[in-house]
Amino acid sequence: MDILSILGAIFGLVALVGGSILKGAGLSGLWSPAAFVIVIIGTFAAILLQTPLSSFRRALAILPWVFRPPPHDPKALIAQMVEWSTLARKQGLLALEPLLEQQHDPFLRKGLQMVVDGMEPEAIRQMLEIESHAQTRRDIAAAKVFEGMGIYAPTLGIIGAVLGLMAVMKNLADPSKLGHGIAAAFTATIYGIASANLAFLPISSKLKGIVHRQEVEREMLIEGLLSIAEGENPRNIESRLSGFVH
Image (cartoon, rainbow, N blue to C red; front, side, top):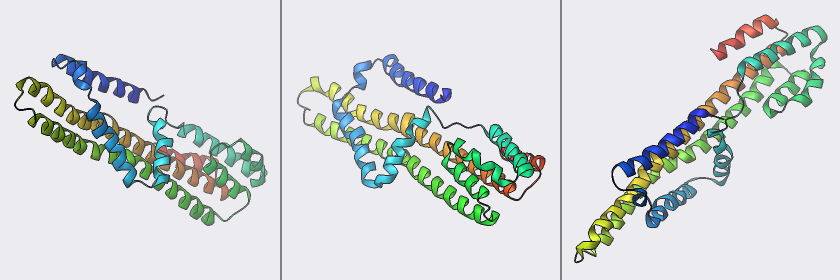
């Protein structure tokens, strides 16, 4: 679990709800079905119009990464590469074949299979780099789904406020309805700005950081696998891959 994401979500909720209570608006001031429909549903409508189905599905798939990111242990991967290198130098590349079934990462399993098959190092690099870059592009496009939501939500909040003020203008003859009507109108603005700055944009930034981290990890795996294929000294491999950690 990502403790920072959990704390951020809790503090964001406390800031919004606590601020409303301390300002005297109370919890009821934050609830407006009309504002919810205009801002939240409107934001989803806008992003559905903008986003290809594949990117939207990927965005939903990686959303849990905000609170439960994929495993990340580069030092363990380096130790694994050094161990494989030592085994390959002693017994040959075919000695790595039994390890294929133990790999849960499809990218690592594919790269290791290429090494075991004796493919040329340059061919291995080209194929793995193409796959890595394609995966990065897919995941960045998915992360930008939430960035787009963060862009649309404040604008829809303004639309909701304007619609609310239009309703208020129709009741100018009844002063008793003006205060409540104006407060309800500005609730839409709160929905738009709060959802963008406390949810959508932070989620997008968090996911982009994870995607970048995975890309660097794949680069490290490519270098490690190529070094094994070329029969480099395990100590040299460890030294080279340690540069990715620092």
